[in-house]
Image (tube, one colour):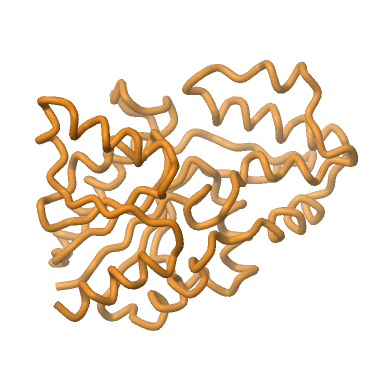
Length: 243
């Protein structure tokens, strides 16, 4: 029986939004209004396609983009937490489910030497086209009305758990660590002995508190433990391994 750590990425593993951090690679470090105002609610990946297209038109090189992305800060305590997970791969599996993209997350984890701590990354596929512009595609399609059009994290988590079960792997406990509104949906598939860990002061904490106030609050079975730093998550993980 293993433990599973499930992480969001932006404002969870890293202490900023990787999709907005990339704007720092531009000479004046800002987007024109024509790009900024093109965002439609629930269509973030489409918006990021326009952002990366604009960055490409400004002749910013892929190396420049990568160098800037590698400077994004990790959230306090997260590198220690991921290092511990890396050192305990026999008992802890770790996945990332994120609305960022494959290139940003790979670059950031590799630069920190932490990519081997993560067994699988579920996020929007990205690549550079023949012009040297980064293209970002939706991770999948789904019919969940609560989630952005490109990614339902609950669908991803349920499929992952099902596939692992088919391989004979059952998790004694699942820890879900996140911060945002799109992290609420996957918490509904967690069990009573699982743990959802919202970041203190962020949207997920507020949404989970609202669930408690509603009559249908029973839709959340997992225990809720709020965190401010990766060291608090590490403490919970270690305690779970010893129990």
